[in-house]
Image (cartoon, rainbow, N blue to C red):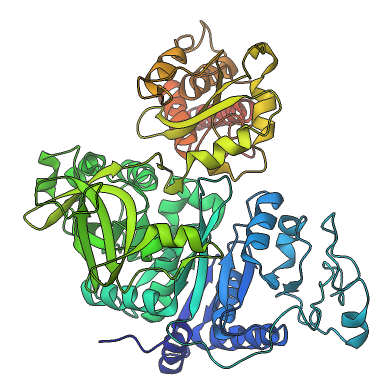
Length: 635
């Protein structure tokens, strides 16, 4: 059946049907469907005053809160397409995404003002009701339309209390409002890593999202009794499935704070406390959460766990299935990418799949989706022969924002039908697809799709770098991180390149795009085909390992913790150095804490640390051991 609805019209129907049901929560904050409908409607009116209408892209820079859901819903109610930026990303990255999307206005909250420090465009502060009271004097001011080079909001708009100044919109900056959005109008733009060194925006219509969720509801029975988590960043397309899946089916959405999302023990507590029924995870994230589950078994309401965002090797699920089985929750692997609207296939994972632990089954296309496997010439390959995944159907994005040539290259017409060339390889046997990997250099790290060229372009900005090669390495237990190999220009001395300087060069990239390690080499070795020989580079960068992680003789907690951190991060870790700045991922920190627990006989979760340093973790270890000793004395 053709899609005739938009995201906001379906939501409004749900709000009319169940006005008092809770729609969204975050900590102690909660909004019913009627409250969310009213608040988003009021904000939508303010956005229309800024000229937002169908076809207009609106930046959204809001932290993980109920405000985030209000703002996203308001943008689509106003007829616009939301362009989400992660408020935790560097201000330069945020400004680059907003500028590249040519948004006439960004909706934000005053808590995220620092994230917009380098954005000189207009901002509507959603948590200040008076900030959009721009009058003729404001909008006629000769400075109102000028871009402030240093990113200062300036005096272009009315201020709201002590919050940031509202950045006024000139009369000619945006089009006049023109009716309601239709199913074929854009609903959002999600940015992915770009091979040219700049992120590329994927524009997706209401029709594509509604089709995905209608099929999802049919397949999984989503409804008003379900509680979902918004676990992922709003800038990651998995969030589309989470946010709209909950609200369009009448369920409850739990916004997960960043610290909770990064700490498995806290996430486990949230899942149980909020009685979550639908959980969406990248395999890397679930691996950490599953370890917390199996260490602290207890009742939960989970009925469905959906995996996506990166390759799932079923072996990761072996401990879970051994303890919990494969029936409840149902475990489903869904393959998809931003350009085909989050998910394109689904495959239930069962215990029998563990007989082939290194295989990544992705199943069959969702209703309304068609998939063909083709060779390098574009010809369809027979079953049993690997080929590139071509995807067609309702989920295809409108294209890349403001990049018609790239759109034409990746969205191709064949047999009178529009297809997306995914760049992924798979093989089909008896109707089921098995994922094999990429046909190009694209990487998947922590669920994010990464073009190494974007990171390499940032590294090459360092004046002492002549060549850069970025790849991914598994540091153990699925802890995959980016690694950069750099060489100076021909004849230059590599001694002038330090890891600290190279790290500073990429500091404006989001955390997931920053290499964890920089290896300086005299030259980049090449294969016979003239490509960078990554295998040789990996051998050159071999790490012999630190001293015994049990630490030196005696009971030196700091030395013991440091030795463990050295081993996991494969480097000499300063006691006061920020572990994340030194290349740690959330998985790496989890491994460090687990090894510390084993070494010192304690049970930390990581949530006890006020800052991610060896020194802080050592203090927490000391405090835990003293507490344990006092309990024994008291007993």
